[in-house]
Picture (cartoon, each protein chain N blue to C red):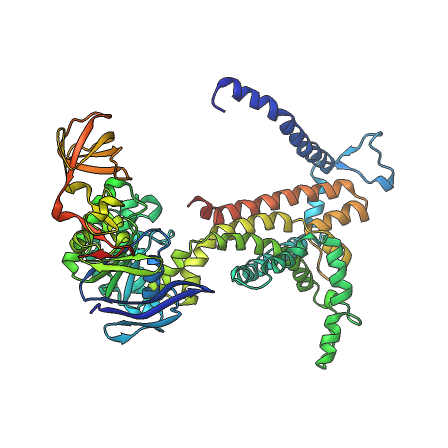
Length: 334
Length: 292
């Protein structure tokens, strides 16, 4: 249960092709994250899978059956929306019961499933409140509860954490990951936040303007980005990209070095620069180094607390085996 | 409005408006109360200057014991209820239709609102002469086209006719308020309901209708206030005949046709009481909707 296959799926709004023909395989039980900058078509893709938008071409099949023309309710998928989309005039219990009522499931079974979901999601204490009386995180859990009780073939999440504050987001991220471990149901998750993608996904799909730039596990994407876009998008802080004579030394048009793969010394090193802003996070310290002579400023990440003043001169050296090389089309060179 | 100075300044600046509105309301109210306890028949030589005879509650008991009082109250309530039911039901349907994306949306919406801008007298005359006239009206032609005997609308079915006319006038108002309410519904809620397996009719019943609750309450409250006092529509169509005499119209007849200002004033006081009873009921029944 829960294998979704997209083949040659296309979406056009009028003359604008939002999603050019696209192939994707989502395996059973997988946590797949669609990630990309805003406007890349990731939400549209999710809505196509959900059936809320009609495809302009191609075939969507769920568990081997063609579902392209199946109405959303019959696809066996449950969706959690960005705005939670709870029904404001119903209590939490009635909200969660709604899909079961619509499916005509008998009362005893309804109650069993609702109580189960409420226990799993810690909703028991406010099961009789209205959504308006709940905090953001609680509403989020109700929305997930409403999805769980349907026992769907797959869950679809449309940027579910973007309305929560930073601390709550980390907590909910963990809860959703744990839920996935426990239910072992396919989950498709859309986000623009690469941290969410890296932390939760079994498989990340990086999208740009409707095109799939790369599909892979988080570490695959981190270690071997296929092109400059993925290299710049995955990883925080962003990878340093250097082009020009320095790149030519490595037989590439552009080379990329992640900030964490640079070592720093006060006396000697491959490159020399002047420290600009430094950000002290406690566990890490980020430096922005100017006047490097490389045609770009560099970000350097050192672990731990490092004392260094703005204006100091530093020498820094990249790890030779962690340099990513890209050709003139922006594609990775092995 | 945070400091003491700004609060007292606000009071001073609001005072003229408050005094004007209070005077506007209190002077006619006091005069009505005053006349209702007096015998005041101008055609019989009663004059303000000569002083008016104090008759106590005689006007009140005469108005109440008149054979036309209770029928007038019933007529008023039938018209108000009929118009409310028609405008709310059709208003919801029209609002749903107008919310659909379509070609020429702006023009259609303006056209739908248009009847509201027509004066009650004018629209009632148009309905009376163009549609409901038993010999030349469009309805008469329609009936004859199908071989039926034309209906003399305003004499044979005077109450339904007036309800239709007034509903036509107030439908745009209901539609407009309900349309804006429908537009404020989060589309993700409808999509969630669709994913949850609710077909269109159930989405309407479980999501759209509860969302409209508050707007419907407002439509009912505002319309009731205005519908209790409709006058022009009756004046130009039936003139209060054929059982279409409302309380407002009865008062008008007492004051202007019978030239009995005291009796009319007593009727006015009853109308105030009736309006307040209806208002309290409405607040009780539908006012709860406004809390949540």
